[in-house]
Image (cartoon, rainbow, N blue to C red; front, top):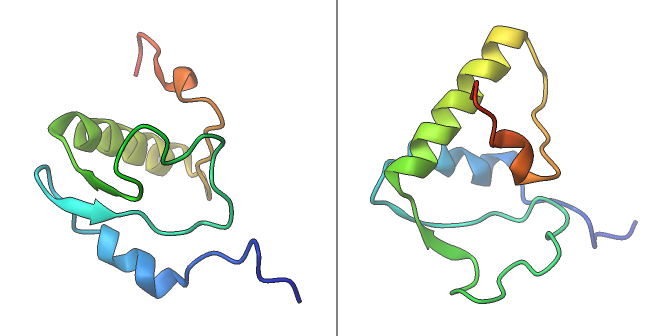
Length: 84
């Protein structure tokens, strides 16, 4: 079986459950990288900002309230709505 698109184990993703604004994290491999990923910045390491946490909490609330099993956003501009 080709492991090219095999994501990191869920156990490794668990470390991202307790991040807070100001934390520096390393992204996990989810099976594919978006086009132009890691271009123009320091690769897979980045700093979590309060704005990132606010967006994540808003999405988390919507996912839970709507009973979604999975959240997939192909275009981040879809998140930029007046009711978000």
